Image 1: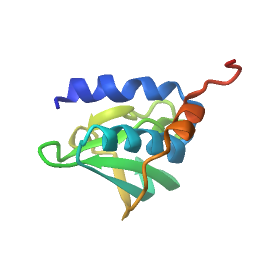
Image 2 (image 1 turned 90 degrees about the horizontal axis):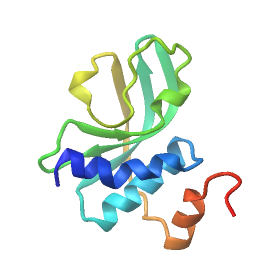
Image 3 (image 1 turned 180 degrees about the horizontal axis):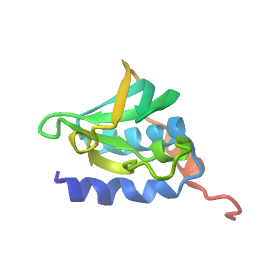
Image 4 (image 1 turned 90 degrees about the vertical axis):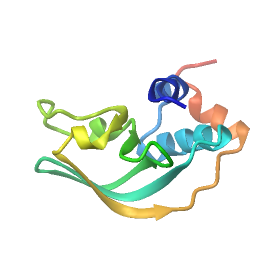
Length: 124
């Protein structure tokens, strides 16, 4: 799968009203269902001088090493002047981003919960 195809698969999830843990669960579920090798992490992230003490993200594997999935990093950064990546990105292009954490096991979401998390506020 190419990076563009991966973005097409995951970008629609960005509309969900979730924070980093929920968004990571949604992305993990999609990646799992499409047999795309990846690893979920829980830890912290430093962007320049700002620290996010608890954060979730995904690292891609098997031919996509160095690529990260993180759709919620920017929501925690107070300084909007910082160049904060969003979505699927090559971590090497962002020297000011430093993730630190541990790989965790996360079961994919059941379809019903996946659909609930995708509901936008005020949806019928």
